[in-house]
Length: 264
Length: 264
DNA sequence: CATTCTGTTCTATTATTTGGAACTTAATTT
DNA sequence: AAATTAAGTTCCAAATAATAGAACAGAATG
Image (cartoon, rainbow over all chains, first blue to last red; front, side, top):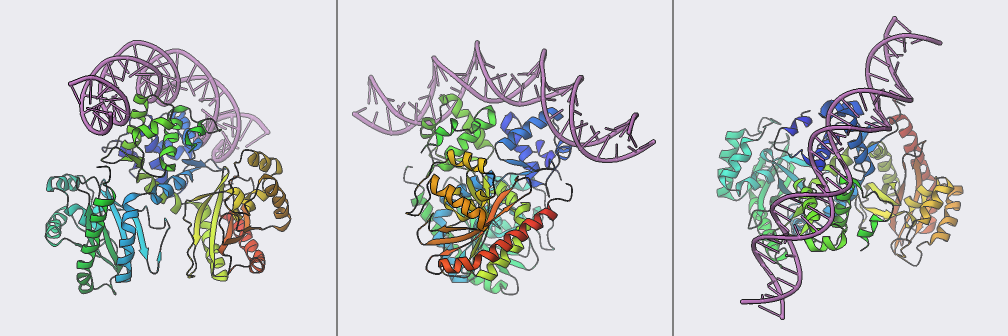
């Protein structure tokens, strides 16, 4: 894992909080609970310092330490995130439209938002019921291999896309996963079409269509998608859904203009 | 809101992180986005100090600030929590047992854990039944009006329960919500029975049965519950499920003893 | 146009964090 | 079982970051 290397990559790691957040990242990204020494090896802090930093995080419930002295992330994060999610304005505004789209297509509908070079999934409507679970919500995926990600990139100014792509490490998830060049080419296509496909680029057997959503000043950039198994979601079927999904995205954008702008 | 008062109530608010977490709490507990001045009124920091603190939180993605300068909680929390949830050992161990219980009862099954004087819901298996309850993973509820909460208290030493109850503010959610005295009395009952009922004490029309789960050193205390609408979950029905739910709790406890204890 | 309200920036002072070593305690080896 | 090594914790002078308060700037209000 290159978690410790994040220090060098853009991320703020100065200031008391910055250093603590790096630690929190290290622990939450680990495959399982970490012992003190494991963390020490990844952090470039002296032992005494690290020990106090971890103690502070534990005291605040951001980390937990078990009987064996192993650290894992704390449940306070769940509480904070649960509130953050429940009150998220974008999600609240989009919710009814996502539900409508789910009713229309019968497939899984996702709402995602661009954060750095990842898409964070904010909501998901599956089958008959809204799933209020973190099973997928809160998950992040790379921009370059998700429908929502590519849709989001397509409405950013070209220079911002170029800058973002330049800093990206492309991991080849499937045979169809993009590289920098093919990604930039497809984004031009998406600009014209107004919607993006994921042709099994992230996971074999999974396809999706997505359309972008954005606020006027681009402070919020994301998208909606309809996702499902390739055997059911043929490219023809996906193409049929392109228009309705663009319409849903448009409706959400409009609702945001009204809903978020009363004080503007 | 008494968010700022938390300073006086036990919670650590010294140290750089402690102060920042108080702010994060204030913002995430608010009903909506807060302006700088709103936060200033609840915090006892000078303006300049508060300004920098908020900037740091925004820089780390723990808070977000919109075009109108209003603060709300940041999406980074979702990402962190999603990982925390996915890798939580207690949840992973309990998962198959919860699913079995759901299959058996057909009603909603919850897994909760005691944190301070609240129960945090860690997982939920929902039936196909049409009646939807408002419950969400990561949500917290007071110990005194939930089945899992009362079950959890019943396995704590009496002096710890007394201390916890003494510091509790009892909000009367329904006509059946406990007060300190009735709660302590019922906990004695639950100790004998091995399971707890929620007789519409939190929400009118919602009942549940719960059984406690705990680790040997009480580092983890929580419970499972089966919850549903009162018209379907008569007290007779709930009583029938008391045995199976105690069995599920027992199985999870056993699985934890093995699953969490290889290094012990 | 003056005035208040709101948010931002600056700097000497103060408090916290740091780094390094010393010190326990647990695990491993001989 | 003693000796050795590793793992984790505590301590304190020095370095660094946070604080308080005032001064500044911009927007909203009368």
